[in-house]
Amino acid sequence: MARPDWRSRAPLGYGRPLADIDHGDEPPRKKRAETMTKLDHQRETSRIIFNKTISGRYREGEAGFEAVGVLLITWKDDDLFCRQSEVPRLRDIFKDRFGYDVREYQIPSERSATGLARALANFAYEFDSPNKMAICYYGGHGQFVKDRLQLFAKEAGDGDGDPAAFFDDAIHQLKLPDTDILVIVDCCFAARAFGRTEIGRRKFELLTATPPLEQTPSPRHSGSFTNLLCNAFDDLLETDNRGFTTAKLYRHVFFAQEADERKPFLFDQSSFDYGKIWLKPFWNRLSPANVAGSSAALAAAAVKERHYYVDLRLQMSVMPDQLMMNQLATSMQYLPHVKELRFQHLHAPEAELEEFMNGIRKAAVLRPLIVKLRHRRAMRELQERRQEEAPNESPSKTPESTSTSHPSMHTKPADRTMYDWSASYRETAHAVRPADTPIDAPDDIDAGDTVHEPT
Image (cartoon, rainbow, N blue to C red; front, side):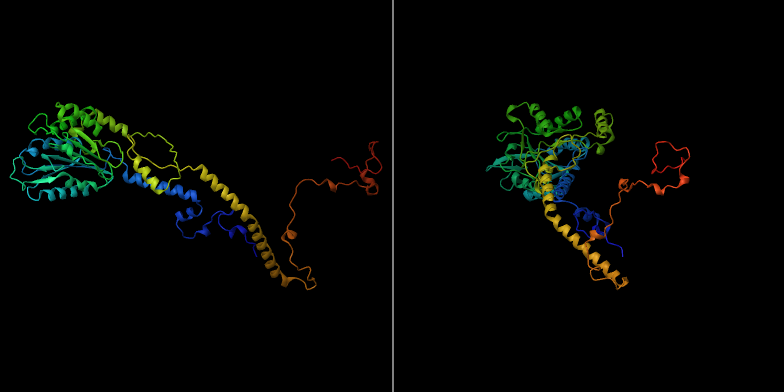
């Protein structure tokens, strides 16, 4: 009977490595989990949470987004003719020079408020994604009514039945989507659109044509805000067609407006400081005429193929949990000039030392128990082996000879290969044969010494 190895039945984690027999058909993830410590589980959980948050929210496209939608809102029966005069140029810039998904909506004269709310809700639903951005533009009349900004179609109306909608009611639809939103308002008293409450779950910026108590020039005027906005887009794209922030766009429009009392405003109503929104073209969606001849675009495409890395170490105040890793990844998605982020490792020197000391203490407590269990197992195996050999033994053996002894009594001594000098001895004179003694033996040989012939 082969003597079983104690390692084959020892508990996991006490000197025995995991073998295939311990797992059977279990998946590899469960095999690895059996050998992971509590700190290893924390590292693995942190890595998964961070990478999932980054992969779901981080910007990796050429424009920084997977898709950008633009909704141009005007009135169907307005007397400013915004849709015929200014909006076509703005539409072509967003579509042809940025490669954005542009659509238009005309507020109807009947059920104006609900129609506008439905259009914004459908638009917000379509671009409700962390990898997308939404741009909403309004061009038309505006007035200040009961501490609220009201949008209307015609300046010379008939009364309360005129087409109108309150801005804050319509903008409520943009508070729900998990996406970056830029709202551009070109109307009189446009800065009244800025509210006290925070809006949106991500970046939310509001660019208005005029201060709260000022009127804005009509589309037929050279100083119209939409015309200045289109000029700013053209100038900035000619200077740097890789993109620019809304802050840079606002600065350009601000100094282009000659009248000091009609300076535009840029508001940030985000819940957190995520930084400014970037407006970058989709080069792969532009027509060849817009891309050809642009050396800056070709240079940007060549640089994009290269890979550069900056390794940073963040010192945390406490051991991060799942919520902290989610918040950290959400905040780091807005780093400029960064294409991708990856979680590498979670270092916790104090936790590692504490885990090591706990292992030593557990080993000190369990070692005597393990030694005792091993001794009992060895005694039991020896007794079983003696019982199997008992029928073959002669009956002349006494009971004392069959008594169970300690395993060490039957252990073979260790093999020592060193020379044992205690076995040396000197032969006596009577053991020497006359034939072994040469005739010309040296004089210094005693009578009792043994002399052999040289070989």
